[in-house]
Structures are given as C-alpha cells and as structure tokens.
Length: 427
Image 1 (cartoon, rainbow, N blue to C red):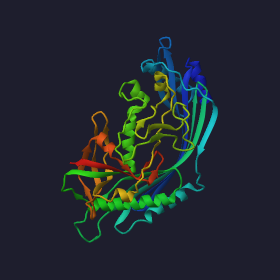
Image 2 (spheres, helix red, strand yellow):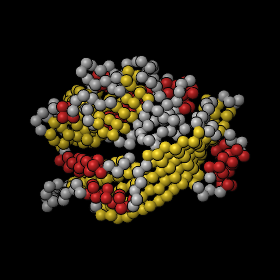
Image 3 (cartoon, one colour):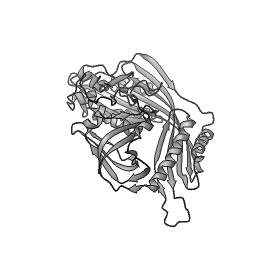
C-alpha cells in the first residue's frame, strides 16, 4: 500500500511527502455493576499521508494531510491527492527540509497476551476485589491495544515502532455506610489509567485509591475557611504544572518571540533548603524513539536545577532557528526531592485529589486552579473538602517548592508523588 501511495504521489509531481501506516489490534471488555456485559476485538489499518509543495522558488512550503483506509482504490487515492495539492497551495509556511533518514529501524516495547480477553478479565477482577458492599465500580472498561506504526518519508526515513498498552476507564461509586438511610446519595468519580505493562501491583494500588477517593467525595464538606494555606499537588497535576512551565521554552515559542528566556537564564530562583527543578524530556519507552516527522529522540535536559539548559522542539522550527531538532517528546521526568511524603504532610495543608486543571501563566506570574476534591489536614486530623479554588504567585511558589523523594512513573511522565507549595490563597 505504501508503494502504491508513493507511485501515485510521484505521478502527480509530489516529490516531498511522509506516510504513516497505523496497524492496530484492540481487545475490549465492558463491565456494568461489575458484571461483564460485552467484549469486542477489532483490527484497523489506516494511512496518514502528508504532502509538501515547494512554492515561490523554495521560499515557502505548502502542506496538506489526509487519511486513507487500506481498502481505497487507486482512483480514490488519486482524487485525495488532487484535493490535497489544492489545499497545500493555501496552507503555506517558510520553507524547511524534511527529516533525513538513516536507514530502516525498528523499535519494540511490546508485551503479548496469549489470550487477551481472558487476561483483561483478570485485570478487571483486580479492581473488583478491592470493592465492598457500598464501594463499587459502577462501570469499568478495559482495553488492550497492540499497535505497529511505520513512518516513511521521501527523504529516506523508514522507521517502525511496535508497542502495547492496557487502558482502563473506571467509574467508582459510594453510597454511604447505611444503605437503609433514604438520605444517602450515591456519588461517582471518573478515573482513567494507562499501563505500559501488565503491572498487577500498580493496578491494585490504583483500584484502592479510586475507591478511597470516591468515599472521600461522599464525605467531603464545603470549606468554611479562606486565607493562605500550604497546598500539596499529586503527580498528575505536578506533571501538568511542569508541562505548562516548560512549554514557553520550545522552539516555536522562541521563533514567535513568545519568550525572551535564553539558555543559561534562571527560571526558578529557589530559596536555600528548597528543591531546584530539573526537568528532562525523553523517549517514554523502548518503542518511543522517533516522532511524527521521523526525528530520532534523545534525552534533552530543559531545566537543570532551575536554570534553562536547552530549548527544544520539532524539525520545522529547529530549522528556522538553525538548531538541532530534539523532536516532539511527550515524556517528562522531574527529578525527585529529598523529603518523604510523610514529612511533606506533617504541617497543616490541603492535598488536592481532583483538580479541574491547573492554570499557569509565567508572564502574569500566576498559578491557580479550581479544586473539585481535596483532603485537609488541620494539624490534628484529616477530612475531605470541596468547592473552592486556589491562586498565588508562580515565582514565589517555585521559590519554596518541596518535592517528595517517592516517585510515580506512567506512560507519559515520571514525577515525584507529591509537591508542596507554600502559602497559596484559598478562595
């Protein structure tokens, strides 16, 4: 199919292109009230094609993309190419060259399940074993995906990655300790998990945490205080904070003058005794070794103890700046701190369980967010709370940030389990 597409492209005068072949097999199981309702096994084979047209004596480059199912005929593909050529003459940008390949390469990080549907049923039961009469999973969906992605371009790139993943969407519920009490109201939460391996111990831990969180939501009280409090972020929100922070140091931001920061500038002026941020972008797995343009990925330290160590970005903007492309990397690693999570939680604090999304604006010097559910420790006891937001100075928060030495690794990040931010405004 790839050769067929290349032949049609060349017959239309398209000499610059990339083709992404996606071959995916998915096994799915759906549970309602902890009973299996349906299973499904699907296979798909699709192609994503991007064409590039040099325009104005190579001063500009037009581009357009389209998708093809493997069942398309030659005439249907040719029609798609004609439409893309017209679109590419409108969607233009300054000229750049496509990534140059270094021969065929295959990267693999895949775990096979001999009987996938039986295995994912065992995964579901890991979650169900942690339930009780009043704490259950109203809905659980388990997916096992195996994907082979091949990327080919007109400049010699021919790379393949083979990977597997287990994904779970869960809705834990809790309806109180006394079922006969008519005033009891059932509450639910939404949880999403993604596992690069069949990590049963981690799945069990996640199931326990999900059920604990939904019980806290049931018992949570609306806050009756305001003012300044210490706030603890969990790893997922910390990952979002780090992502927002370093996004300003990408090649695109530099090219568009959205940032004035240069390599060597201090980004985080941490006070003595607090943790300095070291953030690294890297491949997330053995299979995750090239990006969508064909750039081979390598570790890139963006922040080194609070100092900007490197800009980063894709092939297009790297060429505009005359720099080496680092590629589009999703996986972020934040180095751990020195204190244990128990030490972080000794003083009164608010530990965020569910956040609507953290808001970070370095130029407005702002950090904040709307909190859906949290745990409050008043110095003597813990109790769940909801219905408030927090805000503060990003600069001041980063000066006095404390990271836990315990870490958590997912398919997209490795972060300290907790980060303590001091004296944020509770609204």
